[in-house]
Amino acid sequence: MVEAYKDFWKRYFDFKGKSNVQEFWTPVLTHIVLVIIAIAIVSGIEHLHMLYLKNIVFTFLAILGLSIIIPTLAVTVRRFYDAGRKRLSAVILLFLAIILNICADFTHIYLLSFFCTALAKLMKLIIVLTALRSSKDVSAEELKWI
Image 1 (cartoon, rainbow, N blue to C red):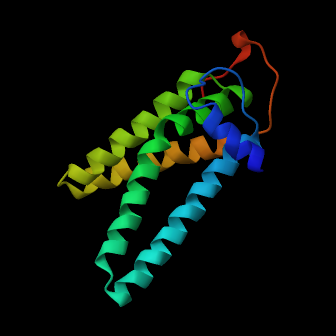
Image 2 (tube, rainbow, N blue to C red):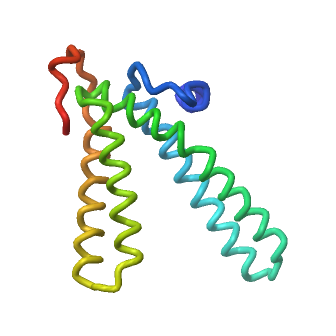
């Protein structure tokens, strides 16, 4: 498990090759746990009125969030390829989900906001389900889009 997390950082810009299920889910779950711990610290700090410590935790979360964007995209692309999907489909799904979330946040029409949010969640679900698939050894011509 530790090796999978180290591999996440070593292959920072590696968009080629494959990543198995453990190489994908280990960093994802590690980052979720780190965020939960940080939120617990911040909520504890709220009661102690230690604003400087709260700012340190938020700075840590911001740095973590910015630093994992590229390797998360890389491991997702590798995971899609390992699951028998085209690499570009992962990129398209991720960016469409981000754009739809932004549209949902900035629109003032309730139905359009709901529709954008639902589509973004569907794309995220497709990404998660693809990441859970077992590895497949297929040629480049046999790769599927979604």
